[in-house]
Image 1 (cartoon, rainbow, N blue to C red):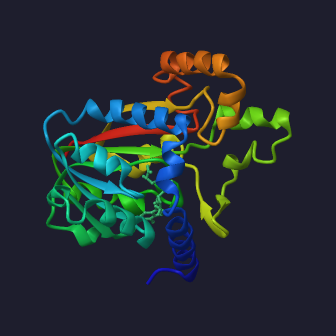
Image 2 (image 1 turned 90 degrees about the vertical axis):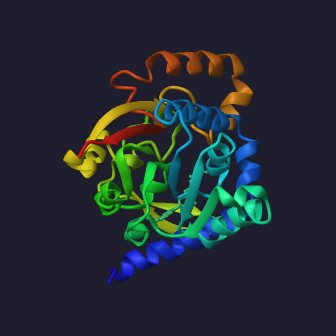
Length: 271
Ligand SMILES: C[S@@+](CC[C@H](N)C(=O)[O-])C[C@H]1O[C@@H](n2cnc3c(N)ncnc32)[C@H](O)[C@@H]1O
């Protein structure tokens, strides 16, 4: 049995994201910073999935990435804890030819044992869904059982150090050092409160253990503004371009491949 606190956090997450699901796609499309980040994630993943493959998507949200992959010939099983998010995916694919290659299931990622018997070439988790769990090994423990030999996992996770967020101290931000808190942080979304945790590259590697080798990791919005800073882009478009170029040059190197708004981390199953 799960402790009451965990169930309560899950209920709050479900309620918050289900409410957000109603305007999630509109917000996403209207945010050029987020669009640039998604593109970087797609470029990262394309290194591992050249031929059509079977993808398990964790915390899939409204299925934006699932649709992207399906439209490129892959097959996706999209899962999420939030009933609202899963409903949005259903509305997008039901009664369309896509429903053969994009399936969906309301499933928290710490219950992946329910997928035993199925095999995937890639497990994919985008944009901080995995920050909603304290201990990543509760999720990664199931990966080797549902991956094909030499299969890949790509996770996009918020790490504890974000240069942009730390520098916001000079603008009087109260959030400048929130990521360093040991017991996580209370997130506020759609009038709901739930706890999230920031995961360092080191703790991510530890959670994957010896069955996996780290193949690549890079920073997302290491120096350029994070998705909520659309005001910065509007005020300083030229500086934004410079920062994007700096990101492109530095994101694969220490420390910008681990100090960023999010990091994209990929592993391959070795045993
Ligand atoms: C910021 S959204 C990202 C959604 C999507 N990956 C994207 O890129 O648009 C985070 C998602 O994580 C999901 N989530 C949070 N905790 C979860 C859990 N324990 N199991 C599965 N999904 C979860 C939420 O419901 C939400 O849809």
